[in-house]
Amino acid sequence: MRRYCLAVLGISETFRTEAGHQRLDTAEMLLYSGHEEDNAPHTQGVALMLSKVARNALIGWESHGSTITKASFETKKEDITMNVMHPTMIAMTTIKINSMRLQSIVEKCPRKDLTIMMRDLNTKVGIDNTGYENIMGRHGLGERNENGGRFANLCAFNKVVIGGTIFPHKRIHKATWISPDHTAENQIDNICIHKKFPRTVKDVRTRRGADITSDHHLVAANMKLRLKKYWTTGGTAYCGREQTNFQLKRKLGKYFKDV
Image (cartoon, rainbow, N blue to C red; front, side, top):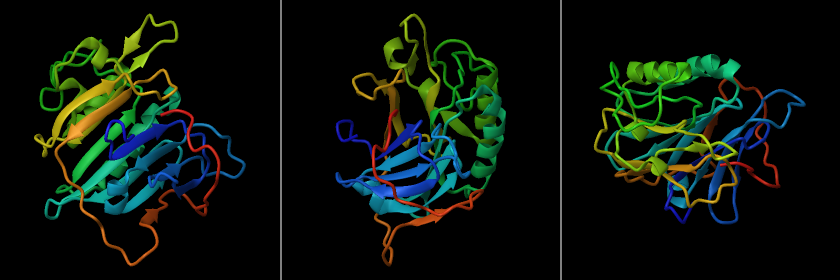
């Protein structure tokens, strides 16, 4: 995280249950969300890891089960809050359900705020941006699949630009996933930002040098945005437990297996 100067890092497949936060010895903070049921399996799970700067700017965060988490940050732009949503859509049967859930979360974000969606969406939007010129460039990879069309519609409805299609890069810097036999590669991880802030994102590309023990590559966005320290009276930022009714617990041990 420090090597690539990342303020916020999205992590998928944490295999944690319930939801909570953990302060790491290296000063970063981990906000994690998993299955909410009792005796739930240690599968799926998402998390956001925050640098010290992002941790200090954290206003609040919400857990939305094992596939979506959201955090809000104070910025130095007056009256502008940055809302980061980290959804992951692992099972094909749950993609439509998670898309609807993600839409309901996006709708609650104030229009004046900066909205960012990032990480593994299991969708291929492809190169052809016909009909989606307002939210897509022509620098994607491959061909759009059914889930990619559904995701493109979601982005178009919410006026969110798919960052990985905007900036020209070599093919190796576009592919975010590679098959185990190294014969196929796709662009299925994206970082998306509201089109109201077009000059905020300077670049989006994969960082193949990051050792993340995964068949996915790290996707990083270079953004021109400064976070502002959010002063509180003590304790931690508010955690919204929408759609959950379990207590937050701090657990020790390995905090992630796959970034």
